[in-house]
Length: 158
Length: 228
Image (cartoon, rainbow over all chains, first blue to last red):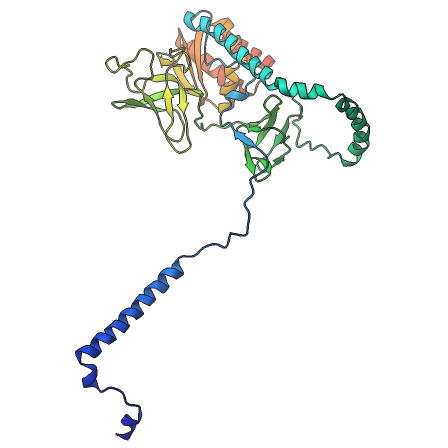
């Protein structure tokens, strides 16, 4: 009996059973559960430590063309007729060829055009012309040293 | 072309002049700072517009905008036809995309009929959309239903060569018979001629001509015609 009392003045079981004691104990239980839930949720969410790594944009500008059509150098004629089997188509083929050739030549011209402003700038300084000839002489010596060996991969045996 | 055409394998890094915008065609991809080949084939380059692409051959078609294809009607819905073009998914062909079509005047395409149409829009995520009119003029211009004749499959590289009018095989055959042909970039070729034996001869000649040179093509065509 002395042992039981020596364990400290714990509230007796009758006291514990009373309503007000139960209420405060329940509050504590709730708080504990809340804490557990919060801990579980916060451990499930995590953030990568990426603030320090900078994502750089690649320096080359690329445009993708998934079809082979813009890369053809000759006219493409889908429907053709031979020996006057289908006369409508034969007459259309000639027109198509003209149109496609025009379009191709226009593209080439547009690519080579320089805008008037740029042309003016190029013509403004005579210095740039003489600088070019000097550059050429120094370039030759550089070229021999730094030129990348031309990568010729597998060549088709012809 | 400034670079010698060379054969590349998937994974090869390609030196590209990066001063202006680079246009990458089929078979090339950008990985970080480099341009890498994803298909095996011959690397080609065009100076105007700084275009690079790989010429390779394959049999499976992947839809791309602007290409003319031959399709088979598999189903008729209220607003469109479902057409099989040989890609991974079937394509849709709206009923109003025909010349002179209105809601009252619908095109009457029976099931399993052949259509020569153009890919209006193609996305890797969605079904391709086709149209049977040329986008600039709004007229048929060769698109539409293909009646009669015979369709067969070939590789995509052969189809691209057949589209080029300088390829000798079709002109060689055209000297002997009257016929008409429609070439789809999805690996399908349609031939129509008066007699069935001519049609079969033409089909066999085209299929065999894939790897032959001009001289060999001539010989083959002459032999086939003499056998008739």
